[in-house]
Length: 79
Image (tube, rainbow, N blue to C red; front, top):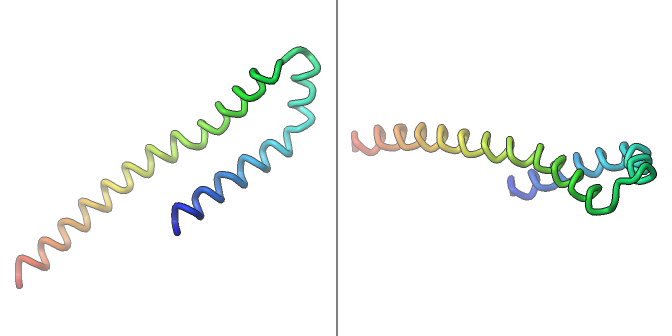
């Protein structure tokens, strides 16, 4: 469920970004940027969201795992 919400959030952020930059992207096309360059520009923008989110998610998951492992080992140790 969290994955679906995260994907939907990133999709909506990218969609709003592209819709708000339509004029700017049109100007870039008009001055000579081809479709491949435009797609690369949009992919780099998407990676600017995805890579930090991936890194933060891995770190946060590791911290949660360590905390849960310590908590569960303490509770199971006393039983």
